[in-house]
Length: 221
Image (cartoon, rainbow, N blue to C red):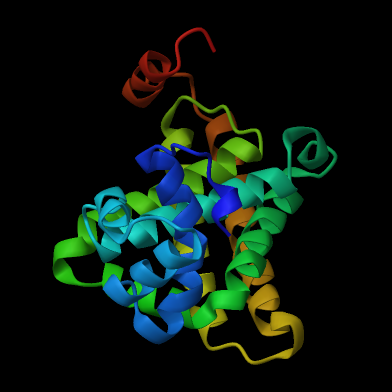
């Protein structure tokens, strides 16, 4: 496994290489020293150096694993491939792809979510949830800079979180129950979005603080 790293890897490269291996061991050992040491051994990384790559311990290991899932999802669904789908299909496809990538390590996911649920990790858990939703919307082509930028991510984060809760306990063939649940939630969101657009079309255009802040965030769009 050592060949997956360059001769003199950076801490970022070590973190990215170890993250999926740590996740594979975390089902048995949790996101702790044992899983980290096993991943380091398999990649011929000095254990002390491996610990430097995860200064926040288990929380950073989970962070790096979820970042790896983001990267693999993006690699599987590049922009030109997603562009052929309708927006609803893009979001559904991306959520299902994330779950498919997590499926081989479902017990590790359970442990990761339990770790993030600890009171001291709540802000970090919120950050990771936002990052996942933001990444999916960006891959789907969203360029909203007004209030929609934030509302879309909050709604998708809620959909993804509730779907993941179903997924963790889904023993149906091909996780069919999870996919059906996701479809229903997306239906609800799409109906809400349709209502919101109809409502906005009947209102006069007013100055929007959210739109102004969004333009500061993404100038020139």
